[in-house]
Image 1 (tube, helix red, strand yellow):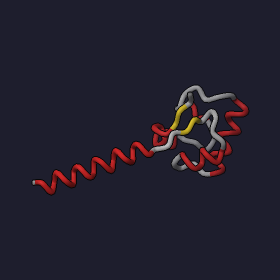
Image 2 (cartoon, helix red, strand yellow):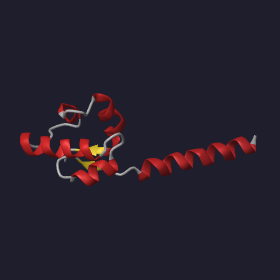
Image 3 (spheres, one colour):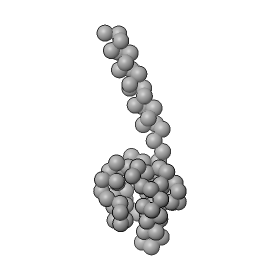
Image 4 (cartoon, helix red, strand yellow):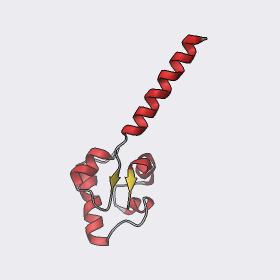
Length: 87
């Protein structure tokens, strides 16, 4: 029983460490390099599209408004929701 508790404790510690290490990115101020590095499923081309959209249309009001960028679907927004800020 102690081994199970030890394993559970280690797993919980690792999960909390991973959650703490998640880098946040402000999609209204970050450059394309930062966006590509931080967001899952976003490479240099999609990151450039985000910056171009922002430059053309103004700042993103919400995290969900990122899905308006061509090539960025709702799934990409959802998997990155905890990493994105607009403030």
